[in-house]
Amino acid sequence: MIEKFSPAIGLGNCHLQTIFSRLHRPKPWVRTECHWHYTLDGDRLGLHLPRPLRDSAEHPLVLILHGLEGSVESPYAQGLMAALLERDYQVAVMHFRGCGGVPNMLLRAYHSGDSEDPRWLAGELRKQLPNTPMMAVGYSLGGNVLLKWLGEDGQGSPLSAAVAVSAPMDLHACSRRINSGLSRFYQRHLLKSLKNSLEQKARDSSLADAMPNLKDPRNFRNFRNFDDAFTAPLHGFRDVDDYYTRASSKPLLKNIAVPTLIIHAVDDPFICPSAIPTAKEVSPNVELAISAHGGHVGFIAGSLWRPEYWLEQNIPDYLDKFRGQQ
Image (cartoon, rainbow, N blue to C red; front, side, top):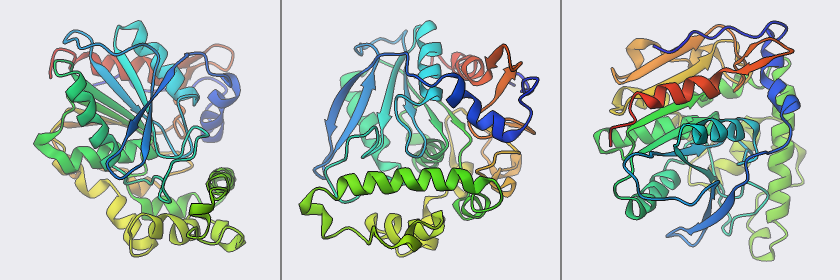
């Protein structure tokens, strides 16, 4: 069992928990170098490394999967990299296709169920590091991708341990939650970022003609409209409901065979509480760390004046328990 989370004094509100680190830690402080891995379908994935990788049974590699429109510069990725490096882990942050300000090469990009890309990349890393234990941590969208990957692979997973934080495990419910109340603020911000990314890609004349309509404001009114107009058709789904059903990780949680920690807050403004699994809905290998408070990828303890980043202590503590396994 991991330490129970209690919100910082002065930061009990879910929205303050969600945005605090973005205001308090706005600049990246861990320097990384991008290494491109070219995929079988003619695209590329960026892998960001703070240090060169080495094949070592004593120094596990932790692959970090960021959230929607996130990157290696996201505060949660920076904080976890720093914490893991202090404990002599190797660390790599995978950018989903088109993230980090660099458009990818194909019309398709990434989505909440895009488990094939980290699976393929892990296979490439395993060839390079045959003796190195591999673990993974996913945040938000990256957390759902990670859990789906684990559920699909079952006993065949290359990972020895995993952690998912604030994952939208039921996309149907989450699309409703983020389209209500103050949560619509986050929806507008993310949709604006997604639109900017698509407009940048559309500057490529070879892709622009095949791009769905970027000028229709209805396509950016909410996530359901966006996913129906862009995500579903660009990634081989029949429609938005087919996408939400097939990309949700919750139905696969019973198949997870790797020690896995799911960290989630009931007051998450992005995610409907009904999306949170019960103990009966997960495999015996899954530990649930569900707290009443914490917001979305927040979990700031201590106080407003002396914040403590609870995730950066407890995620490494959990991974440490499986450090000698491969």
